[in-house]
Amino acid sequence: MSQNPALDAVLAAYRDCGDARLLGSAFGLVVDDADRRKVIDAAMSAGDLDADVRETMARASLDMGDMNAAEALCADCPELLAVQVEAMIGAGKLAEAEAYYLATVAENPVLESPDVQEMIDEAKQSASPELGSNVIGFASAAKGIRSAARQANDEARAARTMFSETASTIRFGDVGGLDEVKKQITRRIVTPFKKPSLFAKYRRKSGGGVLLFGPPGCGKTLLARATAGECEARFINVPVVDVVDKYIGEAERKLAAIFADARRDTPTVLFFDELEALAGSRSGVAHQSHVSLVSTFLAEMDGFAENNEGVLILAATNMPWGVDSAFRRPGRFDRVQFVPPPDRAARAAILKLQLAGRPVDGSVDADTIAATTSGFSGADIVNLVNTAVDLAIEESLSEGAEQPITREHLAEALKEVRPTTLEWLATARNYAKYSNSAGQYDDVAAFLKANGL
Image 1 (cartoon, rainbow, N blue to C red):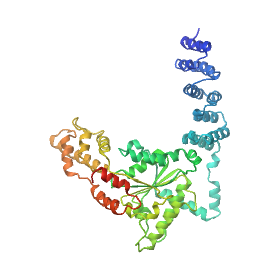
Image 2: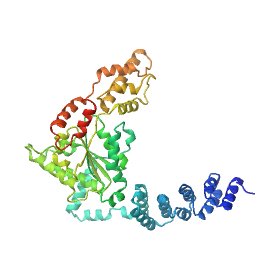
Image 3: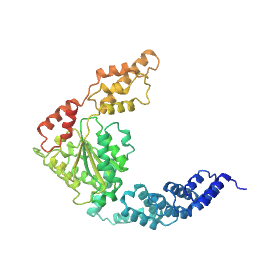
Image 4: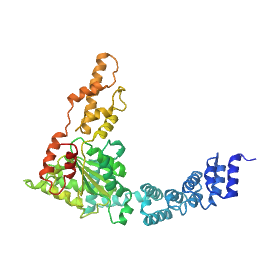
């Protein structure tokens, strides 16, 4: 007697009418591997399976270790490319899996997936661990070979130990507001990184340079980290103080080593904060060392000696008018993005993020508070909340019991905290009005006009 009469009834109905949709219903009734095998065997002979049902059956086959069944179920279904490649690798057909993946992506670049490529790379590494060894490198070192290429590699490794390297876990969802800026970054930066084959069809390379500018504290650095997180790329923060050196030629050498290391392991995001310190205008500069540093920076961004594909240079500055104009030509920082102070909705979102997890009185309304913080940067809002927290802690100590953050605490904090963006906006207004012949400050002018500044 059958252990699962309901499943048998559905499979019998499928054999009578041939409606493949019944197999999806049947799979919802399985209780063990024997039941799964019945449904999978029936699916193997079906010719009109829905893609979702195919994927369910194929993944069940993978779980059962039946790689051949999983591969067969994914055949002629490009949407299941990842599952089919996994099945082929599991069946010991690594070379075929890689060739099939490359051929499928070449035919339809939209199917390209960094996760599938990583799965193939890991399988190749596991199959041939000797490929990852450094035997040749050690032998060369033992022989004392110090070619220019090897010296560059040594400096690149030294740069990796000097500068902070992280896999960013921040995503755009962690950045309050700035929806239009995030949309532009996704279109111009993230998508080319994730779908390079599609962009290669249009001869559009991934990488390049993006300059973020705006008032202090408005999220430029956070956006850079979120961009690296969205790209799933290595993120290297390059502190200006660690590049600049009192010895002539050392800053240029460090900068070249940083780019060399980035090219060795792509995709990589290089982030330069306070860019004007490294890329300041050369006009009127008396020190030849600064001119040489800027020229080296320009040459590395152009990638004359090496290919910069897969290397994204992100930079942030509060003084875009202080950056040498040569950096803004196409091929360098050809994408310049204004990061404005947050609007009311963004300020409310930041307030909610900052108040989350703290003892807050139910009467506190983030939207109402946001309406009274026009001109505040994200950093100003953080300062506002911290000031209110200090007042709540002071009251708790005075009362001898925990006191939540109230509207009164935030109102009192508003008397102490002032927006720090106004001075920057006043300076930017002059540049937008009198030095905007090339249109580089059109976004600033539009923001000032929209906000009556």
